[in-house]
Image (cartoon, rainbow, N blue to C red; front, side):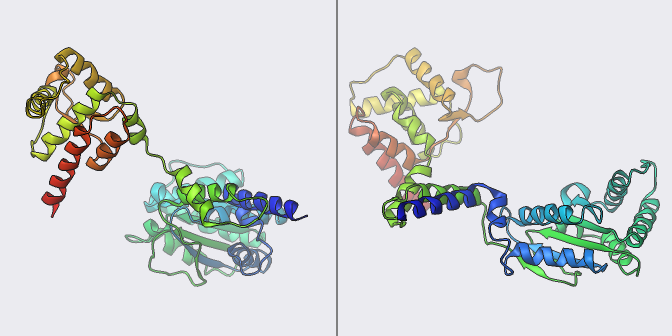
Amino acid sequence: MVQRTVEEALVLLRKRLCDPDFIFSAFSDSPDSNYSKLKFIVSSSVTEACNNSLLLLGPRGCGKIAVLDLVLEDLLKEYPDMITVIKLNGLLHCDDNCALKEIARQLCMEHELMFSKMASSDDNSQFMIAMLRECGLAHKTVVFILDEFDLFAQGKQRLLYSLLDAMQSVSSQAVVIGVSCRLVYRRFNEITDKLTDSDSTFSNFVRFLFSAVSCIDSRSGYMTIENFKSALLTIQRQPKLDCLKDCSILELYIMVCMKRLEVKEQASYNFNSVMKEYKNIHDSFQTSDNYSRNVCLRAFEHLLDRQLIEFADRGHNQFIEFRSVKLLISPAELHQGLKSNRSCPVSYPSETNGIMKVNSAAKG
């Protein structure tokens, strides 16, 4: 019985993390959920034939649009002939003329009317007001969704004034929903609904939680700190370090030379500069590794292919030896990569450790 309960809990957690709709639909019965609050406001406009407006605020990726889409999907099933949805995006329609034209186009498409591309902005504005009046008389609610709302709230705000003026009519029946990740001056008269806190790494955080849930011991049914440690190791991807583990000694040598040139504050360097530094290291440490120029060039090209280094210019017509290059890994990554390479001579990691100390001193 306990085993089954644990498995059901795991399934519930995984679905909640992976299925955007499930995250909200599983808790849609709760009167305190964002879904319930939003649905009540919009549905009251439909059933009571009144105007409404609200603003959804929250960081990108927190689920504002997901909740809104779920609410509209359910309301369209409950009131199939009583709702028209008009969607605008501030990134595409922040220009008032463009926004009014898009509203007219969507209204024409919804009601199977002929849309005129040559209509003026005033014509489209008057058409929108007339359609709102006709929809109101037919007890049909028009829902305007203004994504990236903060972009609509800039400038003369002609679109917002037109919508709010149209909503003052007794016969109109509309809901204006603004969606934004930024706080804006609020002309809306209903609520400011803040959803779940999030940040730019929301998707990574969800993957981390999913990995932690997947590591739960089904016998105990409890999450421990070890679950989160295992999840962290699972999701931490270090492609550069993985590439460094497979590098040859010569390739590591070339990257150490490049890092030494950067520490010396050499503005730009190319393969020839790297070879000079390679010779300096060889002479200074009296190493037994002495590769020919052609072998070094092949190793250099291999590093380019693996994207551990890249060209710093666009001189496609130049020979590879003369093109400026730059290193794409940090001193810490290089040092870690050298330490993890079992066949790497001891002097190499100590050399990069010295480079890191030089960098730290320079920053201080």
